[in-house]
Length: 116
Image (cartoon, rainbow, N blue to C red; front, side):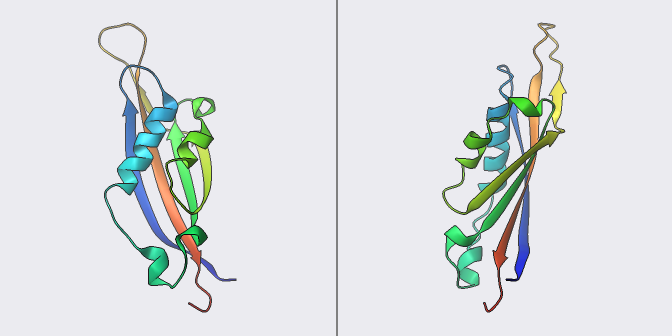
């Protein structure tokens, strides 16, 4: 098996008022995905379900991200989600103590290209 990473996309998402880290993460995933249309699997004669997708999410409070919700954004592929410390909580000027949450993601797509 010769699994090779073939593509990496980046995205940013936010939750302006609700401090919803999952929503910020899913918006970041959509930001990365919705800006392209790459038929990567077909290019190598593979099924879309064979794509190995790794999502690295960075947020200030990783324990507040629902990994299953992030995975659910993807219509196909074998998805692995890793959530780590990162992103940014931006203080709001109104002083209510609730920051704007920003999430960053890197999405990598790999395929077994042996014999393709």
